[in-house]
Amino acid sequence: RALALTAMGETAAGRARALCPVRTGRLQASIGHLEDETRTYVGTDVDYAPYVELGTLRTPARPYLRPAAEDGALCEIVREIMAGKP
Image (cartoon, rainbow, N blue to C red; front, side, top):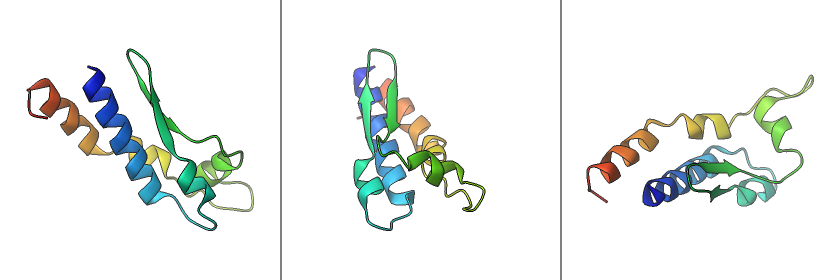
């Protein structure tokens, strides 16, 4: 299970970095993942990240985390690891 969580976190974080809009690169560089026993978390600690992801009254949303989390490749990683194909 730990291998699957790590693989999912690395894949989702990489995908989020690829989808992240870049102005200075700070937000993109801050995207990472953490794991506990049952979950992997992908995100950033940059204070303006929610405004980029969700938009504001003046700025349209530019999602990068949600599409990364919904990537079908994550399910394939779990299937392969559970089947014993690293």
